[in-house]
Length: 299
Image: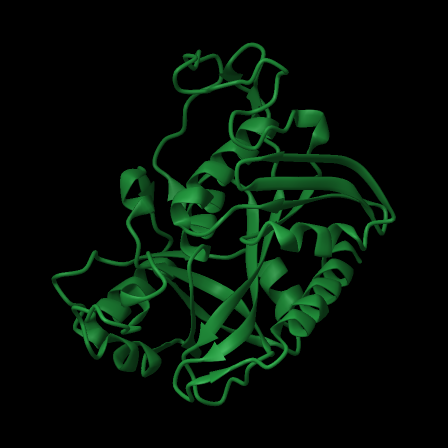
């Protein structure tokens, strides 16, 4: 995914648009530029931040504001930040824009910098598998994120050729329902997908705007599209299957790509939606994912 246009260096961004706290930190994340690592692991759950930072050789900074918890330190000689986002693409919209602002906007002069810095941003999450042969506690790495939410529809972007092929194929193959938003597609960073995907499942991740109806779950309220999960499970594209549901990757890949960052998602499978199974020890599986990701990305 590429931007059609970006705000040019020298443009002054007004105080109502770029909000800086009195201590010089960015509004929601409460981080200053010197408190951010070059490698950022993002997690939905606040409690998972400490599960990452306890591996650090040194923790240099901790901060919490609302659902956003950040620990910055050193692992294998790499300056790393572990950051919680909360649940959903709306929070990813906040997180990616503010991470980008910390490295690519001069916060004192309130203008984009003339030189661009690319962060590596890796999401470590949980998901539900959409293929019967993908066991719980295994790991899925997202080659693409398919947005079933609406966040990226508010940005001026254009797709690459491979993203365009995928989204057109998905709409046609599933006879996409008219009563839900049209999907969008964004691609992950090829190198990170290769490194994290080795010996793990690599596939197409579906990012929903909710946990229950938007993922085909039914408690008392009945989903508007009853057979959507079956259509998605049957979908494949250029050797990749639709592998899993989660709630953040599409916005991470879309905004990260537009703003020139290297992004990737790795998720632990806590549920297999087709087999109706749930992990008996997802905490242990998540710990193993964290250790593997830290070693692979900092090697």
